[in-house]
Amino acid sequence: MRKVYLDNAATTYVSSEVLAEMLPCFNTIYGNANSLHGFGREAANIVDRARDRIAHAINANKSNEIYFTSGGSEADNWAIKGIAHAYANKGKHIITSAIEHHAVLDACKQLEKEGFEVTYLPVNSYGLINLADLIHSIKKTTTLISIMTVNNEVGTIQNIKAIAKTAHEYGVIFHTDAVQAIGAVKIDVQDMEIDAMSMSAHKIYGPKGCGALYLKNGIRIDNLIAGGSQERAKRGGTTDVPAVAGFGKAVEIAVRDLSINQQKLKAIRTYFIDKVTERIPYVQVNGHPHQKINGTVNMSFEMIEGESIMMLLDLDGVAVSTASACTSQALEPSHVLRAMGIPDEIAQGSIRFSFGKNTTKSDIDYVVDVLEKAVNKLRSISPITKAGRK
Ligand SMILES: Cc1ncc(COP(=O)(O)O)c(C=O)c1O
Image (cartoon, rainbow, N blue to C red):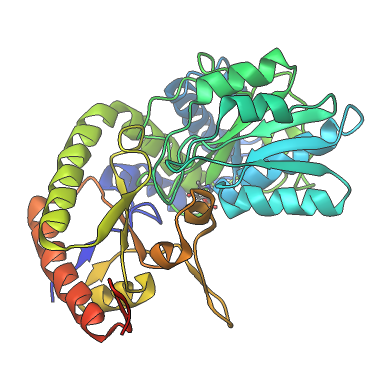
């Protein structure tokens, strides 16, 4: 059976260039990067190079502003809780958006339990926050604003530079979750005035379980993980040298190949949307029509459920994802689509297709064939019709 992977926003394979960078670190350069002997220094050099590569790719002022973590979730949790705690004597108010990844939202929820106040900004139907809403929500006690650069479900790109500038005009620290942005949009932390930024390796052809927090020198943060002196004594734990080596290479490649990859993805995206909308009626594309990344397309198929489409596609070897969380009671529509004002019955029929650098037009032809078949089959047995319930 043919297999097509259109879930690259969930994770990607490790590219051969990245793997080649990692392999010697498993059994040749295997020292502990914290050890003071030659084996350790060799490993430390690998880690330093990865840090330099990432710093360079995002235009950080200094390499020591990059702190390795176990992934995007840890970086988000650390940034939110660590900065909130470090500045708690100044104030206990944080601003974020309703469409953040759960790593940010749940970290905020934990802070609320500790007595912090959190404002969750609404978004418009494209998934964009409004600058006036942001300004109105800033208080004397606000210490941190965290708004994601690119949304993982619909691909909408926020106006990060303007948001960060606004935060600074009010003396507030600005963090962004850029997990879905690296390799998709140009990131320059100095130009964009970003104080803290979360990144992850496994969305950009790097290994799973590795990420980083960019933290501008001078911004205070409490430790999330206590322990050894690693990461400037801010994040204890023996450094995963192979993963860090791979991550450094993955970021370097993602930034090096950004425009060529985006051109290819744009062509694939257009081809896909044209084919689907030509062949399948009652479909809507969610997210911003232009201010979005090319790799992610979120579509709602009316009158049927996303989970069922996903399962039928899976039987035909096609991997996609749906954002709805299957709870014991009911299918909960995605918090992102809900915040964008998409009615639950439409949101429930939504699927995220995320393309990768290897996705071909022939893959798309196959996916559209099996998608059309799946949608027709499900609609034929759906109790709901355009005219109402059957
Ligand atoms: C926007 C966003 N933030 C954070 C994460 C979490 O990253 P990780 O899987 O590296 O923990 C993801 C992963 O899906 C994401 O898409």
